Image (cartoon, rainbow, N blue to C red; front, side, top):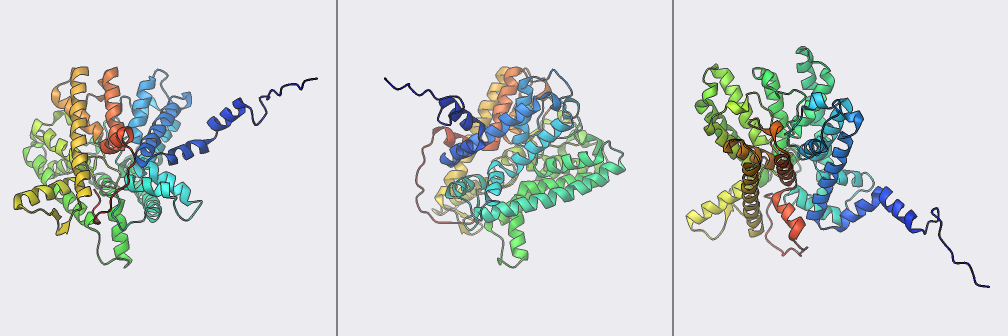
Length: 466
């Protein structure tokens, strides 16, 4: 008599359906999958996961006040939050419930401190050191100087973020409570995180236009935004110096501070003396408006205290340059980064001097850093050109508005000349792609799609992060 063939039941651990369910329902398989990828692909899929999960949560009935918000708008807002851009096709306060606003805030926080930072922090809570795979990814994401350890850097970032955002929330709470704002505590927490993460999301439809002459709020937003945009490298550098662990801060920090000061001063002066719509204001009001808008574009925080569509072409060009340069490496802002521009400046200076060595502040910059800077600028220009061209085909808006929208999305800035809410379906997808590309980085995105893992050749080290 022949034996009966064994047919595995659905509850049998060896059955195919059970295995599939376990794989799909267990979050560990995805983490293991990401760790096996090369760093660029891991970063790309990590942020894509944030966007998709965030859009799904925003689409839930509990998240929305309005029932007719399209899925595309949910993806737009989720991408904008994860990329810390701040562009939105809908009103945050009118469209989303408190739960929906909390989801947006969590996405901003995750995008601001970074996919790799959060994942590494969770890993460090279970062990003292990071795995080799996480360290490799961290090197790509953080752009750290050679002497920095990723694990110590991650711990410092989490502590610093918590302290600054709590202090910022206290400051906002005092301002909003005295101004009689509804739900001042929630508004304070939301805008503190949004400012430090340079996200530009606001619970007010006109951003901070109603606070244009409120000096304490202007200073608080600027302080939080500069701290986020200049990057964790600068803050940790000074912390190490004050504690006597190092004699001087790194070259990266010195260049970031110098570039930030020069750009802030030059752009503020340009807006102060040349913007026609500021001419009827008092010198003090004109100065604060100029300072705030220059700061907003340079740090890529994206808040505004003036109506952006009223700015002249000359002022728009100033803001475009600031958005292109952007913030600093390992910070919360976007753009090509000021250290990248400084490296390009070093190439130009060496060429004019006829010197074969590329020097910056008396330091020789290794060729791999130079190639990284050149590639970043090149890919950024290609992406900006393509994005603007596509918006010109899809949208009836004037050229300057489309160019500004593309630059704002790619630089994860969030400023707009007023066309975001009226974008067509095609226009929304173009901006979504630009925001995501700006958060991941054009070079990292290209590597994730096309590059094969290669072994790095040994080269001269420097403490410049590009």
